[in-house]
Length: 316
Image (tube, rainbow, N blue to C red; front, side, top):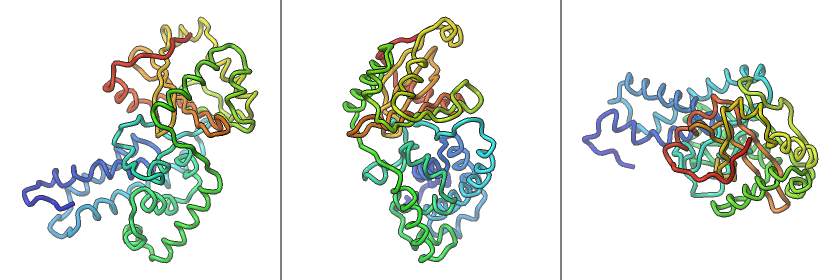
């Protein structure tokens, strides 16, 4: 996009902010870390000799990507000591952090399933995959950003795609279909019986919860329809201890998070948890539960700004 000649340094940066945030979120799996990376990029932009920068957009992308690569290296060390299961930070539909969603590849690159799988990639593999699949950068451009050869970028891209394609399966749903999925899921969870949930889940379904040692959450995955059904039945079963812990009842809403159907649990204006449901033609194959309060700050703000909301049910 051509830059207006009267644009200030801030205007120049703000024209790229949304794209930079979307790149950083895909690279880091954290909206909070993505915001920090973009702010660091702005500080470097502010301090740079801009008269020597011929293409601001390319310069900003290179700086941001390298900041994120440094963060990924340190994040890997932190996650070795992370308590329990790690899941990406959930992002509500309509948030610009999700970035472009015109193609299936762009939408898939921000799904919780792919963001989780990308944790297994090396930092360079992740960067090449994100820039190529989600933002359409050519291998020559990526090579310049990462200071690699073009042929090396092509090899890295093939390797990253092989790692991700071998393990993922996803069915896209629109808002209406997403609501139907979570309504059926919630009704089954509230039935007090395991059988309705077992019927919704695939035999090899997996449930993962992330409490980050801040909130009590199961620290190992639950595998299999019956095990998940029993786990969820206990999670949704009302009792006085749960009500006392949250200070009353919890409103359960239907939402779309990272392009997937989700249940959003809210009390007193605070999002307490997000349960993302990965639906396939064969049934629900994965349940991802985010209750780490550090990863719910942005979605709480976005949810409040989008209100008022009408809950599907109140629990506990």
